[in-house]
Image (cartoon, rainbow, N blue to C red; front, side):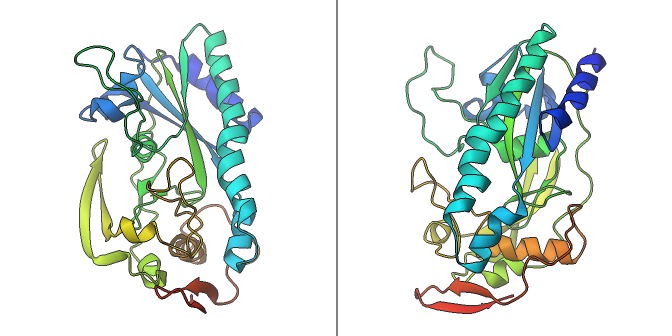
Length: 289
């Protein structure tokens, strides 16, 4: 039986804790996820995954859009946002849950592509460290979908959010899966990429927690060489870069706002002139719309 009282207390607390998004998923939604990336490998007795998110403020992307300031995005949009602002909110929510007598395990959003860093403590267990796929968890918690660009999109902020996870043995009613659509398949992400890394002519189906979505064929090896705003992975440069500030996703952001496909609205459009870009040859140019 789900603990509705616990859910009500969490929903009342999130505004006070500065949390913009929260979703809940049962253990059943993670059936079939391999043990090396399954959050329940970390806490087998847990019954619920809670995903809490803070928005990436649109202004944190302004310097990247203008080509004038890249460092402040890496702080306010990535490092400080994950390591400090969101971590404190997650910690405080863990304390609230523990005060109610339930165990709560916080999980940081490390890349699921990080190789294992040890050996299994016994036969049949995954090797440390288990790093869950947060995109999968966001879909499972009913917070949005994977767009054709391969990035997670929410109906409120598009790609502009970061998440932390909490595992708890409290059984909490799960959030319905998101049934709408944020991505309309416009192809702006592919059109704006000077490296040609996104191929909208070859779509593949992916299924997460029973929800099926279409994603473009993406040359991630090219994404790692992107000089149009993508941030190298801070743990290992060979891993996937942060594509949220990249030209492909900034073009997506503009389209979603222009078409009213996201709820977070602004007085002025994000892009008011042709965006800067560096082509595959390394030459600077203006031209992405």
